Image (cartoon, rainbow over all chains, first blue to last red; front, side, top):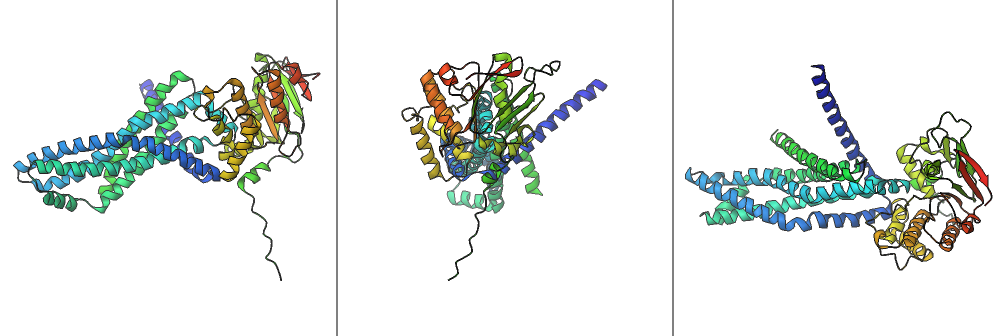
Length: 261
Length: 248
């Protein structure tokens, strides 16, 4: 019995310790932004642009495709099902609540995690194993400034932009699905616009900020935590990606609670 | 006509950081270091002072502990016992961010060059100027161009370390160590695999500061070619954990 309690306690303490480490890591990254040098700002901006190109621009095709397919499927099924009950007015609720508020941000974050989260974790772990992090510290360069900050800013901008793209494509594709199922554009537009509110814009931006931060912070944290050597790199990537996915879902649930409060 | 009062320029955070330490203290002091992790040999402690403007080399076998001296000087590791002072400041006791700032007074070449693999040699040289100085970008670019020229890196400047030859990588790593014109340079095995002439050329550049004065240089190595050895002011051999003075 004591052993069971001890095992639970040990596991809980380890998780709390990781959470504490993550909180310190996030704080260190935010503090780093105030210590950027003049030339460093320009270089960080260049790295940030390159990060946005890789994270957002190169993912536009995939996000557009998935948003169009998802919206087409959901709206087609919803119109048929709701139509049989004479409740097509609720199509706007399905579009806004299911796709714009929940599935859009979640799927966008998952796409970015699978493409960029893995790359960030692997890059950070490799930097650590190759001694490049120590080399930066030896030069008096804060690794948070050079490695983490541009990636975090890039991920926030990219995730927010891709979410807006996802929502736009989903609404357009929803119209296509609705018109194929006999709904006129003006009716679809009126129903959707009646359901959309300013809160949806704030929620999208808020989720972009939180999910984007998670997409960069968790993989960076687990990547830089590598100590043993190259064999630990795949494990760090797995830990970083899994932790990000959990964080995205948990924070999505928190958004629901906060938004409904 | 009364002129406007002259306002003294507010010192930047970097210039404040560079003033840390004790004025006129020697650039580098190792006192009673235990390099061999042998508490039963209290007499075999490593003591060494690198005076301003001098070039000192510590030579020793792989297991002599000489390879740790560089990282002790940078505060990257702490010695088991004894103390290390850089410009009078106990580097091992400085908090992390203070230590980061303080390291900007020290140029460092780690074993195996420590170049960042995803940057070109030019960007590696520029790194400390961009992120560890408060110069404007135009000044940084001029300084990098001068270093690339001085270290004869023009042909290889656009290459990444993996595509460059060993001598160019070494030149870039040492140019990076000198980018901020530091008061003290610590070089770990900097001349391994280089010809005597290339090593002499590099050591000559390392010793000269931008204002023409001599810089304090501390080199650790397993061995040194005679021509480079003769350029040193002091040669120290680490024997059984203690420093033994030899002729340059």
